[in-house]
Image (cartoon, rainbow, N blue to C red; front, side, top):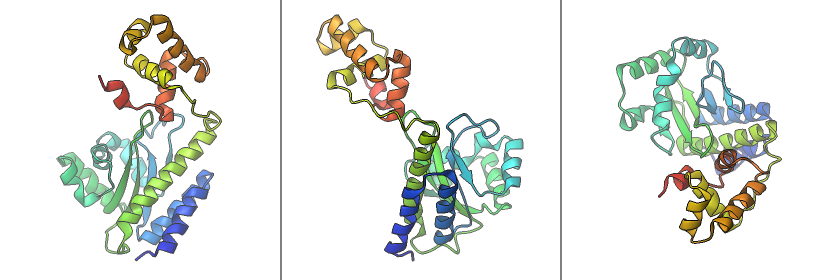
Length: 250
């Protein structure tokens, strides 16, 4: 069993990580302490040509990574698919309870086992405006895990991914952009713009004049550096100022 003091040491490693190499070290330390053998943290993007800002750190066998890319396994990875159906961490033997496993899924899992990926635990990460991602810990089996490894893996995966996001934002110089402090009416107007409403429609919904609605929208735009409306919405989603639920709600 992992003692509370050791858990604090693990989490502090993620809090202090300010480079990819330090985060890699923190993940490797957590993986070993939990009783796993390998880890993979990253956004679910095409690994053959990952976009700027995509996170990827792992210790998976390079032969398996190349093998999977050659066969296009990424799009049908059952771990990735299951992670989009839940917000809690899950053991890989629970996959059949989360998604309907096809023969192709079973083939991928069987072949992964030959590369030391026979069992594992995955922590999904869902953030509005960002790529979906996961943090996974893996081994040939669960036999060598500490008694309380899985709940601690959930914590470590969450802290590790947040550290990765912090490092990514600094690398892309996004950390220099503070989240704008919008007034309540500006935030309401921004959400309505995201729902495709015109200034006139915003005025009707908020029971204010078109001119006043326009001023609220312009105030939000100024807060985002005079961004065009579409980019303003993207930035607000990325910052967490609004969510997709805000935009889809009627």
